[in-house]
Length: 270
Image 1 (cartoon, one colour):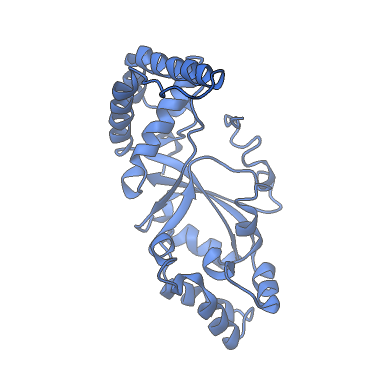
Image 2: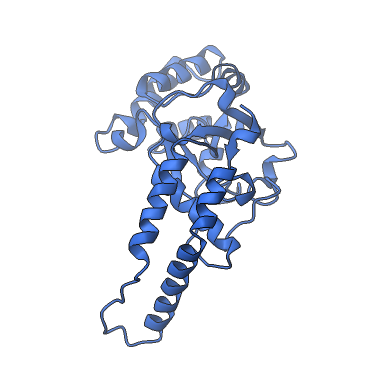
């Protein structure tokens, strides 16, 4: 997959001409909505908070624009990021065959592969499989059949991704572990990795979030202060090897710089 086809929702320079024209045509609306929203927020903060919340007269048109941009994004591919811990064979498999949503069956196959490699015993496989939160009906909707990513690169010391980098198998394996020996096992397997993935927005649940992020990113070029547009997303469909843009491994030069100097154009929003 060519990097020229990939949009970073946080980088206007990656937006294609059609998307840019659409945003530029609506510059006044974007500016009017956000400056009005900011003014109303400051006025309310300075008030006694007893009055009715003011209505932003540009809100409806702005929402229509976000939805229209989201529809455009649904025909595009964005760069997204997945934080995990993998053994070397798993990295090679991903580079050769791509990625797939997780299920209890794929978890068992991953566990059995580690047993064949001598990293787990048969009893460990059964114990780890049985301990997975993916057995629980309340956990299944958010986990099974999904491969999760984030739209913006995240620093490796961020609390949201540290456990994913520190434990093999993701939350499907470590999240409910109470056995200290098993905890040590999964923490000692593999190495921390960050996957850069080209994800067609139509394969995710987040076309509207993509539209909101793109509008917000463009708004910053107008001097406005929109909310941070980063969002989590998932695909429920496999993505082939061409979708794997890069795999960054602990110890490599870019790994520590992801989210703070890599990509070079990325500027964290405070």
